[in-house]
Image (cartoon, rainbow, N blue to C red; front, top):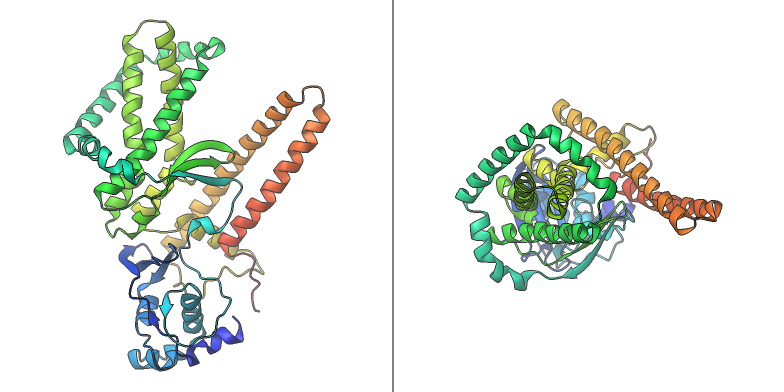
Length: 412
């Protein structure tokens, strides 16, 4: 921490902005306060105690005096308190005061768009709010309790029917050899992806959360769609956040149930083949989305279910804290319990394993593409692909390291 940051408590730092949006939540780490700056659109996570320190700041007198008047623990002399105030000032969470401008990167839950990751690229397309009013009657039907019950019964019935036809299902995998309806398949998958993201939007609207952005996502260079539901972090109810995370899979699974039922009742032919291949692709996509070790719907649902915001970055930060010579920036974080540490360790190792698998698949796909583009210049295609991959992996690695806080040396 710089000398200026340590001395910031001697200045009049002002007070918390009155227009901040806050939400208090109970997480596995204890009580937390999520704060959103309406001016920058960035969101930050504070412990209850840290936020109380910021609430104690009063304009017109040094921050040290304000904190000393509100607390009796000597917090006004703590370097961690000085760093907290400096970060809040740098994040524009404080207004008024006479603190000179400082260059200090804020911590907490920062808007994820502030770091560019070539393996996780989001391209905004449109603001879905004009569609919300049109979709509300649809949402009332889709998310009605009786619709959910019917969905559960249909899922059980179709699952049992597929289980009884398992030999037939395995035999029909041969369809992939001569499948000629790929344009129809890709179109149906694209429509399903749009429905998936609109389902997130509709569920957000039911809980009063505005979604301002939907677009195209490239995750490990594989195209997809996304809806920016980051405002849902402000909902204090954990069940609502989980419902938003799983809304897309819920509605997309309805599509899968219908397609699978259609395959079961139709005879062999073009529609039967399309239904079989489409159903299998949808099933694989739903399963991948449920895997909590990738930054997909299953991850957000797991993080909210167990009450551990920023589970992924916290796990990577914990892993890097085990590396000698690196500082995971834990100054303002409470000591981890044995259970919490075990969760982070287990999740971090599993997430790294899945990242390795995803990277391996990406590498194979790129080299396969190069072989098709340069069939007569295999060596040139190999080196071009290898160079592109190396650049992507270096940038992505630096991004992960920055999120984990691994590049700050320990002051031993």
